[in-house]
Length: 267
Length: 267
DNA sequence: CGGGAGCTTGATGGACCTCAATCCCTGTGG
DNA sequence: CCACAGGGATTGAGGTCCATCAAGCTCCCG
Image (cartoon, rainbow over all chains, first blue to last red; front, side, top):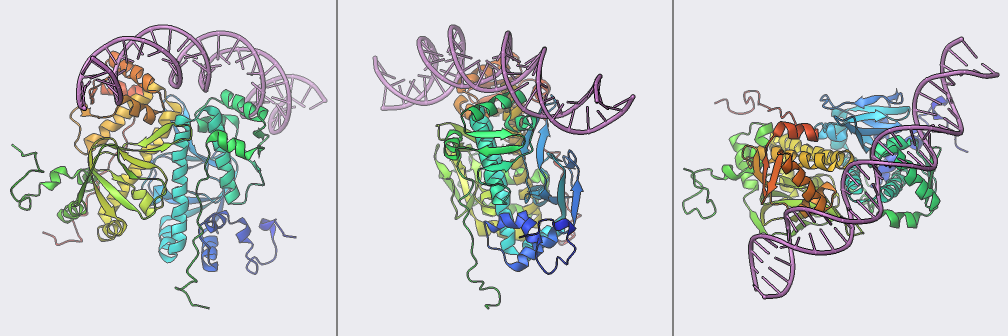
């Protein structure tokens, strides 16, 4: 029914707002607040200038100042810190719809590096445009800040995982959290999603060795709880997995509905 | 020379701005921006209503909404998350001059609990006052946001520590970071500071068992790098300790000087 | 005197790392 | 076509780091 090859569309996109289907950011924010058509199109315009980025390229280094944020459109990325002894700790995995470097812009640089893990498409957003967005669309702004605080809660949860959970619990928790994040933007099927992370990358994220990641994955497979094979994660027993990981859903996600739009023309 | 018993002062405090000596927040922000007298007194007024809090009391629970922030005046505290299996992971240790719960207020609640570790004094600041401060004193606001982003960078560094550093490196890094934080507000002498944390608390922060904390402390002592005894941390060989921990100073701390105060009456 | 909280030390075991080898798949150049 | 290299996954063997269990210590407080 629907044409999903947007890039090669010949007819005018102006007539049908096809962009909305790919606007993962709008999809994510819609969970928190019901977006108006004006807000949707403003978001679409923010993301109009898209840039291709090859796998393994670094988007932002430590200590950069002249700030811009990036909205990830497609592909996977990670932010990490390197240690003097050669080790690496991955902080987070931005997925499509995530805004990267917003904090560094609003506040100040917290120095870690962003790097793409696959070929990706991003939109660069300069600082003044973000401030304009926050001023002109306050509810949109609060939704964006909601998403940002959610990201920070995930870093804290990550800290808890590495500090006080076993490798098995950690892995289970990680995949469950990722599942919920991807579902939020419609990138996960029921109990299944694609995940192009190597075991070495997983290791750097979970504070384990790549070899032990392999063994833990085997355990999860043998317990018939979760399978990770050829870039596809399949969750077999969600409840048992969540119990094992001590996993709680990230937010109760209250949908903020406008009070019948009192501030705008009332019908 | 100086009278340090402020609480029992009988003469009028109005005549001499003694509050400034105890205003750790102002001291911290002064590292980033040279505060005007108006900003200093505004900060002092923000912190005028002080509240005593007993040791072990919880300031903010998970998921609270009607937000307020707390400026810690004296004493120690910690923020942590509890796990279903009874474990606990401490996220951070606020010290005097730190603002607690600012993020939960500006953004939204990131659910962890704040608890005092010693008897403490805090100032409660309601949301509108913070927004007023940010609007009326933009430079003060940017300094506060700088401090906030510094706090978040510390959480990330904490994550790196637990994920990729050995117990010895972790401990060394922790005490060095704490040393720099305390120096920033004038609460550390040269290579020495008081630190009323039990080994069990340290364990919950560093992702270790209390017993292993003890052994690691012994190692640091036997290597003559650092001593932690009766609530006093003594750094004996800062350079070697920093090399061991892979420690880098938190910020280069650029002092933002006003352009000869063009906005105010020029002398 | 007893009890509790915190610190200290030893012994043992488990979780996880490191080293090493093998296998698969893919791409590359002959 | 094959040879080869390289990245990733898998599995085994052995060793290290750190948790757990257990006991004894000091200090403080009732």
